[in-house]
Image: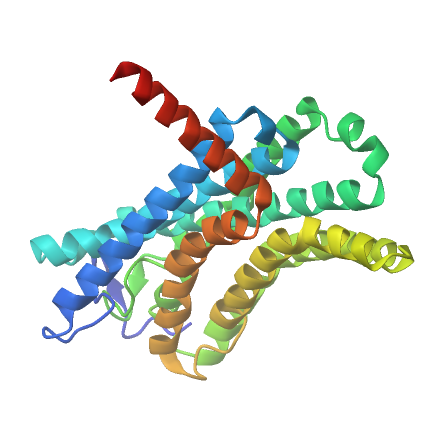
Length: 316
């Protein structure tokens, strides 16, 4: 790293999603609308699961945790974007910027670990259906969820140590809409190859183990499905995993495009797109994937709606 042209930085300027003043009002409205949909969608899933006894199963317990993570991740990344549109202040202190990066990395690690736990849950549901209730008991589910949350924050420690060591940067202007690790590292290294190596190693460290332990259960799931003789049985087994598998492919596909490609290939502008998709589209789509494709959630929603209608009818 060449520090000849670097200076100490006490605050950063977040450029945001768009620099064009003409596009900013429309961008603000779109981001605000999507954030509201994220909050409403994930809170709806959370409330439905909590209020519906038929959904008090391991899968929906993990889904509640996923909803909390999606809300937290979107709030951490979008709050500065939305507030800067209103106030016009795009500055953020270096400490708050580092804190935002580390919280986002921690929440992302939590989500990857949670998807791993959910893949194990799907493995037991398909491969050991007769033992599902005894294996995936409340104690194990609580332990797995706690482990996901704790390990996600522990996993961010190396990133914290590396980023905290840097106090001098080439510039204090971050070409992004939040303090993400890629644009920050672009301000640290003059050599693009060092930036690519650093980002690749960080992405590899944070995703390789969770990726392996997420997809290994699906090897056994596929083998079990192939052994089923009836086509209806195969469809039912695949349906059991389809929602989770869709979320896994969506999230990992976005992360690979965002972090595992060379920074210099398409520049940071395309990185903004993948990051926006990861922080907005994925949390927005998760409730839709789990509700629109899931008969249990739709049935629970209808049941709650009928209960509310009956209560309102009695009151009036």
